[in-house]
Length: 282
Image (cartoon, rainbow, N blue to C red; front, side, top):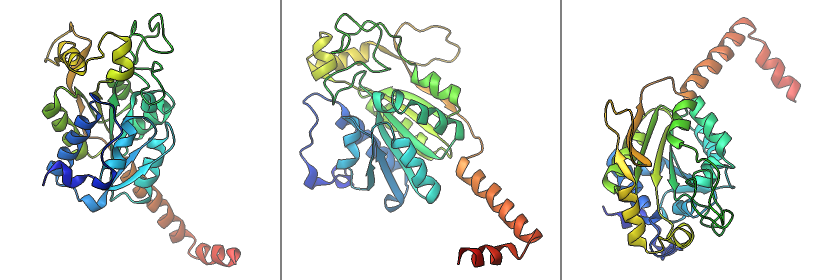
């Protein structure tokens, strides 16, 4: 099968700007899904609001386009209602790290078996280029006309510290590597976070002397380096690689086990309770 076989072709052409790498990242996600061997009919793709969150609208799966910053909350509901489903979330830097930041922390903490791909283009692209929590310090934006003063979140460190059991980072330029990390995240039986550094020539690029999409891709290449075992320092802003890959108790399984055990114990001790509750409901 080809990538096109996984797309809703009646929704094409897409609305992304020329030179945007959201399409390349979406393609990497689709290939990772195919390689992972998961059942397409038991896979749900969830997104919030933003340029990157348009991706599930083009993907021929069961998809859920939700409120700004709330993709993980909706995805958690889907997974809790039916733990057998494969739940994948595609989000943006503003959607996941700003308004949705608290949901991100607690999804990591709970270790719910879902995979989050954060497409990080360092800007709010859909709403005219405001700076986001992942905009580099000193970069220009419509709301940072003299340069961004804020320090950017390190999404990898945030996810590690919050308890995710698989954490990785790659870029749109390194698409084969990104595909491998998404596939590994899908196979992980816990909460996985894959940061995909993207490009936005229209809003980030124009204000930062990189309006040419090729220059932006070269910028990704020149500002990234692979993680090295034992390395204490790095010279590039973006370090790529797998940072966490471990096994811990998965939330939905633990929840079902604990709740079921308590329900069974209650009815073993008080076998008439269920009938009384039913009569009370009537």
